[in-house]
Image: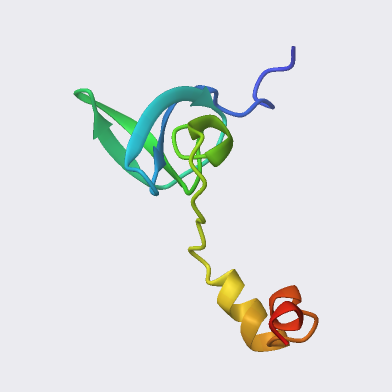
Length: 89
């Protein structure tokens, strides 16, 4: 293989912000943040959903809407085409 063309493959800590779960894996992802985890410094990647918080793996149905997408959609379209407003009326 050619030297100097491959990204740095190293251990990285991924932090699931929705349930405060951290895990170490190897990755080439680039990040500016670092964290001390288990007595050692690692690059840090913050994520919103992992296997620890995803409803498919946990069996719990919870809505993770950190960006306010549902509210933005409701403001934009209101109740136009809403099945709940048609059923009530």
